[in-house]
Image (cartoon, rainbow, N blue to C red; front, side, top):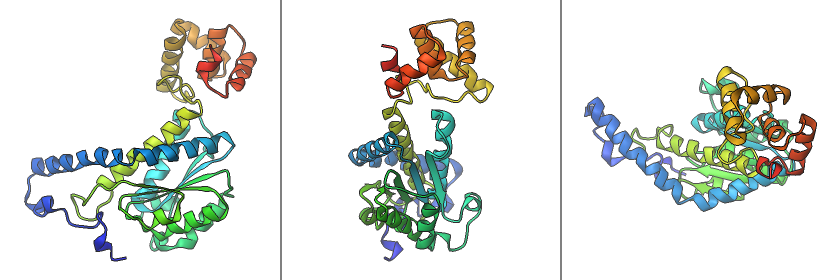
Length: 296
């Protein structure tokens, strides 16, 4: 396919004189273009919701979520995967981001990595992909061979596959069970898909991971009750959550949080149900990890 036909590669008529604009004019036109991103995503919400349920169902049966991409797309997948760990208290194995060229490619361009379909397959094979897992292939252009190879391998082991791109009728859509095509139009800087396309991908990845985690009980209301209190800020956030849900003082919350080995969920159930840690863990197990059901 001639990349000139891709909307992500075409020239934006509103910015053909970009080099003649002053700073205020440049950031104003960028802001105007960015406002189109949410509207483009809105059109794909039904498909995004389908993807969320597939990911949540995978988690419920012991499956994992893999993001696979190259360049900006790959970096965004790695970022979302990394941020799930402290936010939702998950094992790093549950959500993983794979980028063409490996960790080196997070900061440097790795020659030819994204053009290697076999590399996409081998990277997933090395993770011992199974039919319980979900693979989200991310490519702004929608045609990256590394992503195509990964999706094809995932389908061969009967893993669920999702394609996230920023072009209509994307190639990767044809290699996935579920397609999400967020068409944001030409970039302010022609072909620079770290701009609107990257913003769109980040927003969709936020939705996929956050909504899936909510669906498996990682929140109570809009509180991140599975947060890992690994620093002073997060310890304070944990205490705020406990006091908000249970109504106890911060001193009491801290004492119970320590007895709960810094598990916010356990602490909430221990306080609300007047029970010890073991009983609270049993209660949460019976409610499949949902705090609301455990403290009813």
